[in-house]
Amino acid sequence: MTQDAMLDAIIPHVPFDGWSQAAFDAAARDAGLAAADAAVLCPRGALDLATAYHQRGDAQMVAAMAQADLAEMRYSDKVAHAIWLRLAAGDREVVRRGSSLFAMPQNAGDGATLIWGTADAIWTVLGDTSDDVNWYTKRATLSAVYGAVVLYWLGDESADGQPTRDFIARRIDNVMQVEKLKAQARDNRFLSALTGPLAKMASSIKAPTSPPDDLPGHWNDKVHKL
Image (cartoon, rainbow, N blue to C red):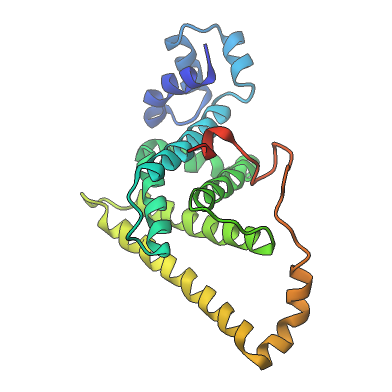
């Protein structure tokens, strides 16, 4: 028995019981696992399975992006498409229950790490090669965008999801405008003189290379292998 099997077993229970101990116990029974054995697979119970569910969605998004025809897309459209594919990898009610779980104070750190991991997966699958402070700012910005998009998607009751697609496009446009302003500031002699010291300090910041497994941005073969 693997954690993936337990994850498959708990998903039908989550819309009714949430990512709860009750759902976890029901999944163990359905999988034919003793409570002690289930605890060995998932020491934190349903929280471990909710984490695995989110990470499975990241992996599915990466696999879908590998099969997508992106040749004629603008870069901003590729980012938007990746976000849409990531949403499509999740069941709305299961994600809603997960959002409630990770909104709890004791789980907020796990939730933030997972969203950062999603942003990292998107930038990585798009071929991001930044190795300086931009590595962090890109992921921080996209994390904020993705978090807002998920909340909007959870309330989108349209049949085709077009309102969510439009919302994604608007958020990405906002990010692109910020990037344009940053570029203009770099090219402006007066502004560049003011921001030069900050830019010099930022140039010393490097992307992580081999971080510990419990930090955001670490390499995960399941997520990043195409």
